[in-house]
Length: 360
Image (cartoon, rainbow, N blue to C red):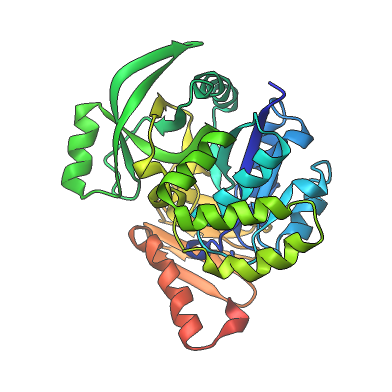
């Protein structure tokens, strides 16, 4: 599969993981789960299937040096720099254009940097099956088998069976539903027809070009202009000039929800989108009382405490508490209820309004 490439989407600020995740060192550069950053974990997961030359990364200008230092085997030219964050739609369009220019026959697995996947072998096997299906023109998404009625994920409804490859069954996609109510999420779970939208897509670069032309003519025109200049001295300056003309839009809304020939492979990967403190808590090892600990210091005193995350590099003492997120850094301390961890991004907004930029 010399024409198979991995594209790691590694932009984003990770504001829901403040105060660990900051603008100069966001979550993808942090060792949140083990001793390696989320970026390094993602590359290591792909390494048995893709050579360094087959791995591309799209990220911001402030992060690329740290990423290259951590994974020097990936060629410098494979790092695609988005001048500023404009959501995943423009970033994906730019990266797919670069790969398409490099290899017109490319098939690309577009993957997020902040995913935790426990079943790595199964992940690589299903990527190979998805590659085969994508050769028939399908945009294949990996649908995560839901284990509970989540209102925090989008859902994919599966239609008729298309094929079975290497033991993995693939279905037509009958539609997307963004973050439903609890009632709807429960209905989806009971029906057995829905998967969580993992945001992992396997598609031919030529199909990406077609869908951008059909659904996003403005972006398509800008991308064609940039593609014409790739490899020339004018490319970087032109990218800077036109980037602000790209709309701020996710790849789901820009392309996937209206795409033709969508397919889904429902799969259990032991997957988690590590986008909040609660989701991180769920993938960390927990003690007999459901507590999880992360940080450099082994010192802690935990008395009558349940279902609590403590993330600290110094001594922390808890007494008689439960369902808390406690994150201690040298200049900021976060304490919140587990059910409110999605609201941490609001703290970042408040700090911006107060112009407390040193804490961002």
